[in-house]
Image 1 (cartoon, one colour):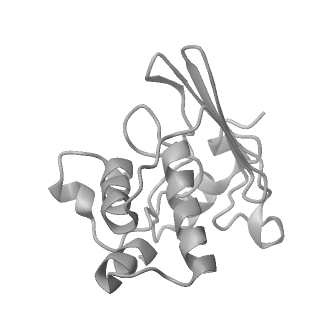
Image 2 (cartoon, rainbow, N blue to C red; image 1 turned 30 degrees about the horizontal axis):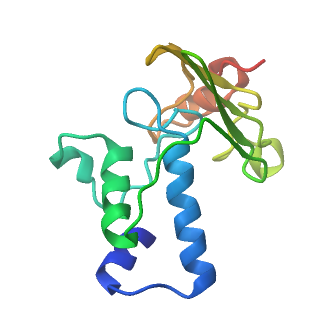
Length: 159
């Protein structure tokens, strides 16, 4: 939403907000998976204002990074190694392997919320193909039992 607002505004945000927006775009680039999306850990509520990926031939990450390139006049490329300790995310690339790990804690005093019971979940790719994915990632549902099942430790590939 901030990126769209920045594009419509046509000028920079205050320095702190502009830096935060660039950081957010870099995180998306760093966590791009082989499918062109982001590594799926936790909820897939997608953070969508406009579902531009439905009308585009590229995925969500590429759509967002193209928008960032226009709005911020900057390229965002994934890092080989990225640690976001405050968020509890890291990604590593070694040879043909790319690994994403979540270690951010469980939200709402252990109740799950956005931070599912997925501490130390990992996603692994090899040669651009998913090898280990997070099976607990889901779209929101009104079914409380299903939501609790998807948020549980048993639905995530935790260590």
